[in-house]
Length: 127
Image (tube, rainbow, N blue to C red; front, top):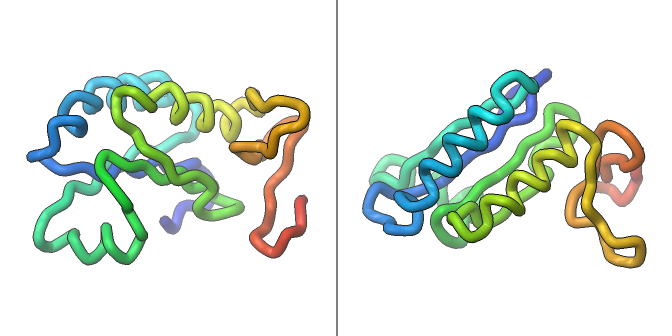
């Protein structure tokens, strides 16, 4: 994702996937909820022409999501089925608002860009 200012959420799905269809309205609601917060939402369906992209990006199952931060690249990969949409929402809040729901002694599930937390630059350095 070549985005320099906005967080980008990519949903990988298939038209033939029951879980993908069930989670679609929840993903669209998530997009509406964050539409005024510099967040782009993109969908990549599984088709013969996009199959290689799904494979190259290591998408293990559908529906799946990637969250990209403009300063850090890919920061989250997770299931985005109806059952897991609130986890995606929570992770997104970490990057947008700096609200991280992390236990004191647990490793952070998300790295917050704004606020108290920071970004791991990929080399183990936290900015």
